[in-house]
Image 1 (cartoon, rainbow, N blue to C red):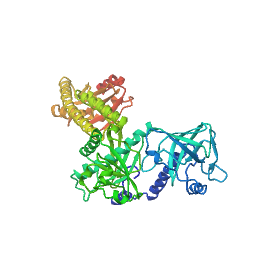
Image 2: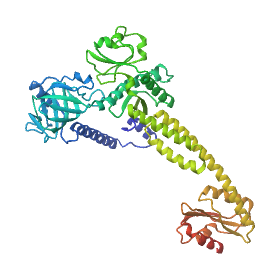
Image 3: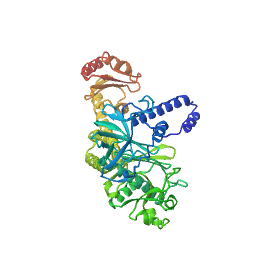
Image 4: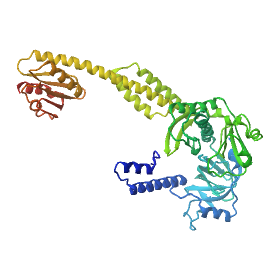
Length: 546
């Protein structure tokens, strides 16, 4: 359920149809365990790995209000590549239950304080929200203290910068400068902007230009996550996307990057903004008034608002968003859709990458495709061995999902070639062995034929040989030894045509006694597999004197 979103009630129904009982209590216990693990992971993240509880809950925010701390002005978070000077330290936090009153605020922090939280009057750090991860960086005070910021969270109207003092001491009331790590923010912004483009691309491929049989089909955002490594987008859709659909969605996104489309943002009255024909908003989300609009469009939002119902806006992405974005889609450099999967009933999830990660994925795909093309020159056992390696490499490769499906189809065709080769090879090998054993029977006096003819330990070949032998030879039983030298084992097979009085099971058992061989059979046919080819001569000798 947690991995694939398979409905509990449907599982229960399927169990009932098969006379099974679903362990409801066990399921609920596991769900509780999952929730506890999730909560623990969240607390660990909030604490920055310190073991402290660094959350500002009602008690903490009420304390800030009572102390006259004003809401943090974070409007500078939309400014790039510029430190924010003239900030003032308004509150210092060392964690819930870390002070005598349990609230957690102090007047001074130092390198010995461990994890700390800083509330400023203004900040250019982006606090985690709207599916976008937080900024990191440093805060430097006017007295030379340096605080490394590794987490930024928003509690009510306060921005809490969580980190560790690396140099000096910090006191409430001191001046500070915020230095955001803009190098890290760049891929986050690329992933966020391309999440908007992906949202548009899905609607374009599945709805506008789609041929879906889904009744009243819609593509609505159900969640998202963007950080410096990837973008993840959840959307409503009732079935897996086909390889062609995945490729088409990826192509739309890449084309928007190559078209170098401007990315504009504009704060507008909510009522006006909601009239834009192509607007994509999250169902059930409560938006502020006025609201920030982000458009991936060559037309500025101010112009769009002059004629919001114009159908031409449907060719571009327009969304309400408070995140940090690129100035132009070309800055994303590349886009690769890595995976598409179901996470709940009617909800799909896409994971994708941009910038350097997209380039790496594209290079990996090209390298893999080259290897797979080269493998087409092989055949038989060589192709089979290479095929196993390529399948394993492809399964673990971070490449385009559409390209991965395409390459899987190619490897599937190779697999069919291997099966056909094996079938032909087995038939050829069987014919040769049949000729050999029938020849040996014709040259042997008495009613028993013993010989070695290596064709591995393939039971199907052995069965085909004994069947062919029985059609040609009616008066002699046969015992064959066939070795697989590489595996260091061999097979002993005996067969007696109808009317030949030889107990094959007893014959093979006597011949392989003391070898550790295992097998079975009946009076007219038996088969044993024996470890260690060194004992073959001894087995043949015993078989001849049986």
